[in-house]
Length: 426
Image 1 (cartoon, one colour):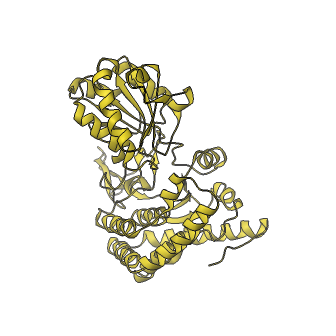
Image 2: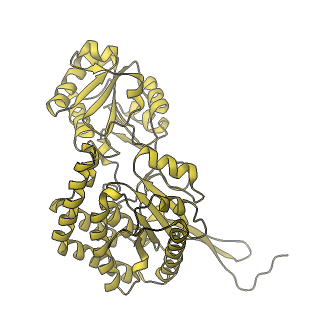
């Protein structure tokens, strides 16, 4: 499919037509059975495995272009697919198929004194617009999650992943056809014209929710310009705090994994906080593990006094999402100061405390307001798949409706279903 070039009027017409088709698809999907949706998902997973060679060939084209235009190492990592990643995407879709269907679930019910039965029942949001960069797996993950929750999807991927996205979408459409569902259920905007993003952000009569997945500039634009409700986070400025009662071996393992397992994901730890009382004993050991793994450390004055291998951390480093093998390190006086630092510099994504002190852990978990808080675990677990959701549509750091990984339940809203037997109100 060649990129469609359009003038402003034609682009608006095209996007409106996509919106109408998506609304029609969402209505049809609302009548689909759980079995029909699951059959589509399982057929998608099978098609992805069968189409691996075509997907990898398309991805090679995107990677070559990415190198030519100077994409950073972290963006290239997000863009890259291999056999294991494709298998993981397919497995994620199968996991979504195995989840309970949230549509129609009663999440609260009561019988009123007058005999009225009132239930709060989950229903799809409708049409969800996804605007994303670099990661072709988003095409599959979001399409599958939205389908399971009864929503149609309009995808607008980045130009750097256009061939990969189209190859994956072809497999998704095979699954939809196998289950007798329209391919308009999951649609990809067929132009790389940036004006298409602007159109999506104002289509509040066609799109019910927008989810941006990408860099700060994309997310800020969506949040500033959208006339449609938005699920989003700007950045993953995640912290791991090593408390004075932390086991040194556990602390090293968790911090190295939290930073270095995959540096390009939003759940990677970007700042290490460590108590002053254990800095002399614990910090050099943790630094050894990080440096051996290839990480550059940027410390405050106290951290550098303990371990002079660190570079100087600037004020900007505390609020920076490095997305590479760079970690900011700060020595703090206490648990309270660690929480203050996180609340000031964090992005409300994911924070972890390493400690064997139950009271300190509970204080941290209760008082840190981020969407995900952890005790004695790597921040890299901040992922819908790891939370048993099969996959995720993104991480929401806002405080309305959905927070943390957005899975099938978070992709529904609810309605009140009232049943009576002739009651009238006096």
